[in-house]
Image (cartoon, rainbow, N blue to C red; front, top):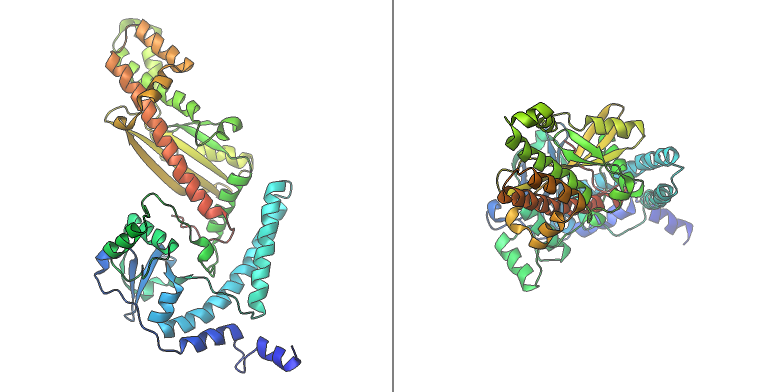
Length: 443
């Protein structure tokens, strides 16, 4: 390329990057807007109306009075529907992307230095630094690169007039439909999209999706969001720190147990069974003079931890003392009333000394009716559980129905735990592929 051609490739006569000029020239062609023809309540995407009357349709990723609203939209929809807005957005997007990548490289370098003794983590960070640096260099040199199909729109709270947000189920349908290139997901009704999915034999409720690799990352992660990303990636690549329990009682899971997850959770099962059996035994022993004299009833009663707002803080102290940036807790309900077993998984990230934030909470319920009889038999024959049940039967405490209920509760809890774990690992996989994936929403 001669010098004059090279100069033209690097700069326009107005000093504007050639990449943007090419796109803007394309946008000067007449395009047809794609606003929905049906009610917002019948769509699978969210609606945002700005103070100047413009309507935007996509999926809201963040919405807070402090930080404003962030929405993911299809790029082709945006350029067809709001071409003038898109021209400005594209220019800002390029500039913001360069700034975000530059700051991200500094963060990656600092992270590398803090964990340079961990080979697996160093390999990941090295790969990320190389990728981000190549992307930034391409942007700075004004090289024409293919634009990602999705982009992020950021609106300050003062620029918003109305917001209508769909349910998670509808967002999921939209994501799966985009994954399979269903036509006009943004503007057609849920019935039309569902009909198209069914015609392709796509079970959208069971299928997962991840669009992070199709999204231009032009938004900087806040310090909290970055710390959360570090915690999630290190949880996967370093030795994970897991706790399990009920109420405010948490027990650390040994590394060899943690590595068996999410399939083998017998240790959790045993703890839950003991907690539930103790609860039932405590009520049966109440008022019995012999047990009162031996102090057994009081001991069992005191073993039932209360639900406290700071139930996770002891786990955080352990993590912080060992310089671990994130930990996972699995808590089960110790109530045997009703027909459901309940499980709650929470992941916490280190933000700064003494400050931890909950990044994700996953709750699962499983009915006793969903329990496989074979699973109940396996629990009944477990040596530790069998020993507890033998003592109960030997003392003549509890009916067969009570024992069967406790066994079914334990089996249902195992199913709920496995379901929660599956959901958590799907969340984890979505947010650790890239260190600059879409910012996490932290409450």
